[in-house]
Image 1 (cartoon, rainbow, N blue to C red):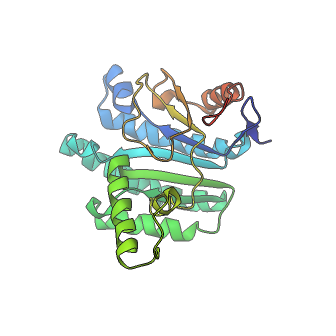
Image 2 (image 1 turned 45 degrees about the horizontal axis):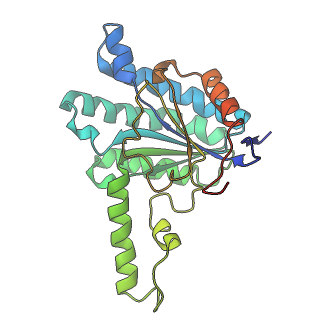
Image 3 (image 1 turned 180 degrees about the vertical axis):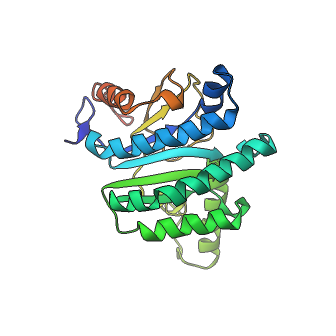
Length: 239
């Protein structure tokens, strides 16, 4: 059954800032990469739960443009986890009707990972049970700069004719062109920053900040948050 807010606005798209993997591991005396591996397992569970919870679109923040500042060991470990996730989950995602896409600047990623990303996007392109988008080397400001450059090229080539560019023109140049805007953005681990995640798309999203660290974030936790979403009134600037 579709989820709706308190004023009967439908929820289609949930976006999650998956925070707290490293802290979760450190609290247990383990290397940070153990937390990232446990976080990847949690993604699998949430992806499987979303369709039954009424969520049709899920976007997860996996690696930001700022995450390159982390140690080389952690960055290399994360890239290995991303490659392994795609390789191991391709069959399951395809069989379960999940369409997988990626947003972010791919040019800095290694070629093998880029090839895997393109492959699973092509393989799952016809699936529609759940639209899963993974943000890798993604930053909202970077996306807006790249989108503005695309729009400038369209203007220079005369594609817009004599008319002024609109919000829709810029939106169509974003990495998320064709995606619905997120209705709900969740951040785990107790932090209350948006961290450069979907600043254009989430302009009117509802936000939920939870103390739960990502490796402890279960489908039941998500269900509770969705229930609270059902009590909210979304006015979109109205009264």
